[in-house]
Image (cartoon, rainbow, N blue to C red):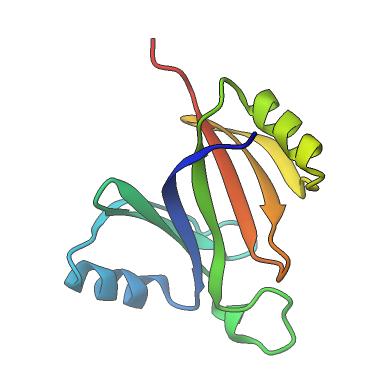
Length: 131
């Protein structure tokens, strides 16, 4: 059985990273790190919201009507109560749910992605065990 323990983070897609960071700073969020631009112009940032994170991905063309990926929510992530990402994968298979991406190694664990019935991406995370 799959057991989420907490909401870890939400990912937003925006057109102007600097303007977005200014807005969230005014709301009291702390910018933890930024990156980019990548070869395709993507910039990103991670902001602290209490013990959770807000991940922001920015490209000016996220606003174009002809894009499949427009501004708005990119994904949200759940921390899972599982011994390993393999256990989460097994639970997803048992539940008959399709993995759309992963497993993906992260700096602090591993993740797999699924999609809800409306296509919202849901990241299921297993943190790396502390030594």
